[in-house]
Length: 292
Image (cartoon, rainbow, N blue to C red; front, side, top):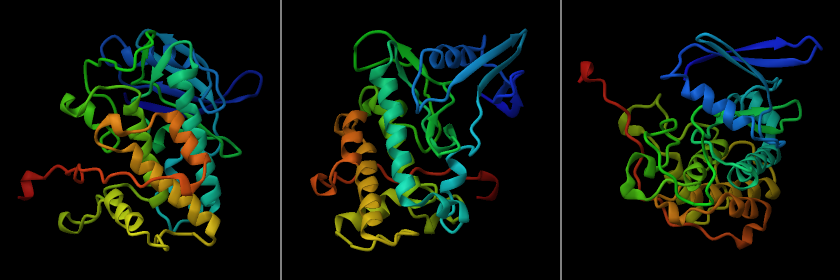
């Protein structure tokens, strides 16, 4: 769903973010899905829908304004001043806040919600850097208290899509699909980069989850990550890494539920076991046949 995001203000002076949809799928299913999903939520870690506009094929969603924008701009590029501004303690707090928001969607709502597009771009930060899950255009609601769910088409963003959404041979689609996307995002927060760097040539490509797994598995004290200056920060980073690696297990049965993720992030590092190495290889980029 393509959209334009603009800053606006209401008659009472409150600032809002206006999401104007430029393309509609079918009869506007994404628009309906987002309104239906967000209107059912009320949580500190979920973006608040203030209202929506519908006039013919012109449709817009009106959200509370987030002065710090998306998480995306704060985590890519470890050498930037923005990432230094956040620091490891704040990154750890943000990871916990996102997990709390997901736990609410999966368990706390009257109608359970699977988001299907958890990624840094869809995490907004308020003035205190409190994270808010946004963009529910791909979300799916289900009333039944069942763990598995059927979907008619693949949902999500390449790089964050759980394997079972690509092929049912990997397992059933469930709340664990959001956990996979969350794990990939947490590893990007730790690495300060996208998990596959598109700027490097194919032969020198380094898949960050495998690189960091090897360091954790070998019990290396220095993880080689930017900005770690204390034992406490090193512990936070290591905890986020182990949690992220559990979340991206290829078989959804081996991934923790989001409630367990919260318990791991808020608990002691000594209690965390290193997960098996995910056996899926680095996602392949498309080859430009015109230059082959």
